[in-house]
Length: 316
Image 1: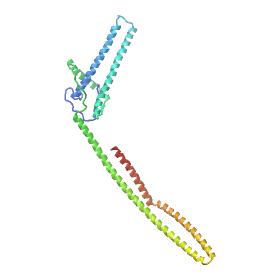
Image 2 (image 1 turned 30 degrees about the horizontal axis):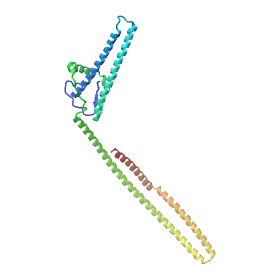
Image 3 (image 1 turned 135 degrees about the vertical axis):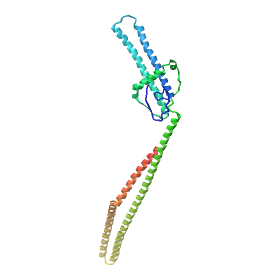
Image 4 (image 1 turned 60 degrees about the vertical axis):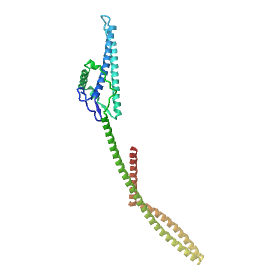
C-alpha cells in the first residue's frame, strides 16, 4: 500500500540514511519494512495456493493422452473458477488489511488531535511504484535479512517535543481568541451602558414634557372653572335677590339658573373635548414624535445588545 500523507502539524525530523527514500525516519522505515514483509508472505502463500490449483488439475484430470475440445474447455473453466476465487479472496483480504492499517494510523493521530489526509492519485504514480518495487527487491534480496524480526508495538505519531509545541500553539491560539472575545464583550457592555443612559435621559425628558403639558392644562382648566363658578355664584346671588321681589321673577331666575347649569355642563363637555384635542395635537408635535422615535430606537438597541451579550456569555 502506497499513500501520500499530509499532516497538519510540525513534521518529525527526517532520518538521514540511505534507506530514507520516501521521507521516513528510521522508526517508520522499519514499520514499512514490517508491512512489506507481511504483504510479501501473504502473496507467497496465495501464489503457492494458485500453483496447487494447477497441480491438482494436472494430477486429477490430465491422466489421458488426448482430450476433446469440450473436455479441455471444461477443465479450463473449472480452473478459471478456482483461480478467480483465490485471486478475488486475496484482493478483498488485501483491501480489508489496508483499512485496518489505516485504522491504526488514524487512531494514533486522533489521540494527539491530528488530521491525516491521503492523496489517492499517488497510488497510481508509476515512478513511486517503481521506487517501492526497487526498495523491496533491495530490502529482501538477502534471505537472512528477510527472516529477521523487528518487533515494534506501535507507531509513534510524533515525538514529545512536537506534541508539546503543537499543544502550546493551540493553547496560545485559544487564549488569543479568548482575549479578543473579552475585548468585544467589554465594548458591548460599554455600548449597552451608554444606551441605557441615553434611554434614561430620554425618559426623563419625556416626563418633564408631560409634566409641563399637564401643568398648562390644569391652569387653563382652573381658570375656566373659576370663571364658571363665579358666574353660577352671581346667578345664585341674583336669584336670592329676586326671591324678595316677586314669584314671577323667581321663576325667571330659576329658569336662568337651570339654563346656566346646562351651559356649565356644555362648557365642561367642551372643555373635555378641548383637552382631548389638545392631547392629540401634542402627540402630533415634532418634539413628541422625535422623543418617541428616540425611545423606540434605544429600546431596539438595548434588546439587540442584550441578545448579543447572552450569546457571548453562552459561548464562554
